[in-house]
Length: 189
Image (cartoon, rainbow, N blue to C red; front, side, top):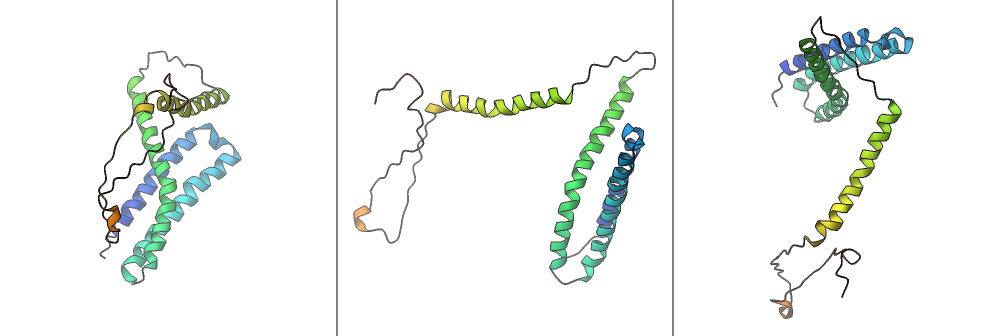
């Protein structure tokens, strides 16, 4: 298998760019002023990128010279853990950069900016809980009132080489999952 080492350098540049941008945003926030914020920044924007860069370079140098399939298994696990972290960082970087561009384009120096009141965590979680709890209820209602008469018929022609002659040409009907007994006006058998 031909391996292109340029992909390794592309991933290294991508990691450095994402983490440099996120570190710049982190420094501008209030989180960086505390000791836990500085330690988190060291871990998120120092150790994780360094580990990723070293891992990509190491795998990139080992892959062309090895004949074992274990390197691909190792690379798969490394890539899984890398993507679990960096897909979230990548999307956050994209949305954050988009937000910066939109805010710069919209804001005019002489215009007064009005801020709406922020939603509290308690209110946000209660609203999300209501939304999440409503979804199963709505699907149950849909099934009870709209999907209860959505029957369908499926005809299958089966053939078995060792089927006895007495069953040749026999039709079998299966009726299942009719949960309409307690719903609706028609309760007569």
